[in-house]
Length: 111
Image (cartoon, rainbow, N blue to C red; front, side, top):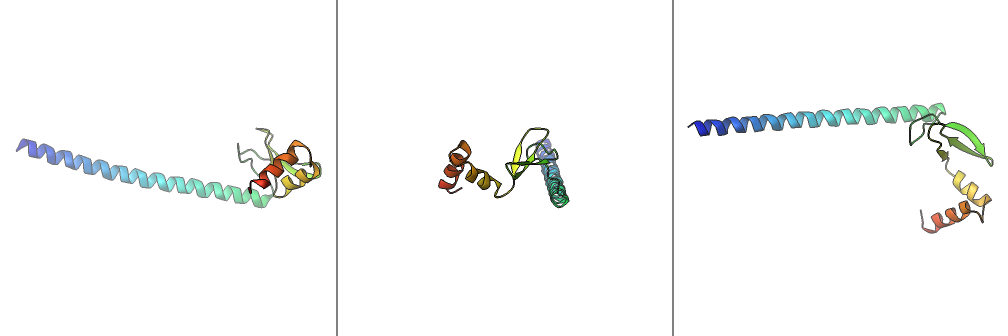
């Protein structure tokens, strides 16, 4: 009889553990979803305010112009970020340089 009681107690502890795991899994998913929403909101605010954040480190990008092409430069990590079409503009200007060759290889691959 004592062994059946012990098995029943063990089953109850396992059920409690399973419910506890479910609770924390649900809570973690909700917290992660809130963090994603907050990050999206911050991105939208930065996008509409004209100040973009570095995708790598999150620092505010400084706008500068390089060969008449607008470039976002990160003062923290030194990254350079181009707007859509800027890559192509720079590649056209430098047909025989490394940048032009890189662009041609990129477009030949269909990327």
